[in-house]
Image (cartoon, rainbow, N blue to C red):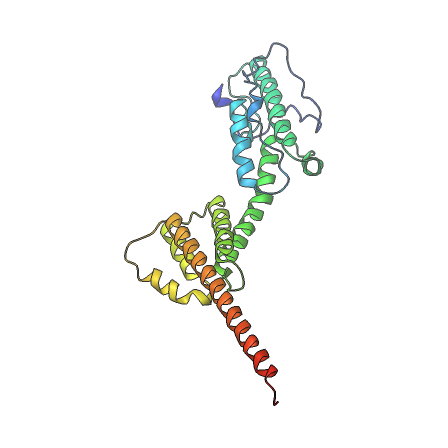
Length: 256
């Protein structure tokens, strides 16, 4: 029956949108494994690529994925009409299921937008046209955030490193993997101006570091700087107290 598939729609008429296609009770319906545990979360307009992959896997477990790319069968030369009708009925039933599984994978707002699309193939292609473009914009936004990210002296370096790691993770999630060597180099390059000496020290190290090793070094360095700063503040405070005390004593010594 594989040679019955064609890009030309069947001439027997298209069922009304949203209506259940008529199915011949004697038609052989494909065996569909109801593995609903693989059902993806509802798509709301974000992370289309991830949702699309999950939905494709889900439809594959139901033996329906082929209806995302196929059109209705047409009668072949020499084929018996009864056999053709049986094939069409089976196709309509399974295509109807596929289309509605995709629709039910959308949030209510998107369901209302796409529920009038006639076939699973048209629905799938409409979603791709719309949201693959959105994904491309998201990628550009994530890349821009990474390139423009600069650390400042007024904030904790460790908190800023964590922020940079989140952006790198977003890049990887969008399929733009950043290898570890590049991650280490970018973190060092983006250190704040007050860390220029430590930055130069790291750049001249011959042994390559992992991200984890770099984070440990930065944490130790920041802790040391915090300790030195506190020690300097305590010493300055003690000096100030001594000076104030000496000034008070000198004021108390007047002429007899």
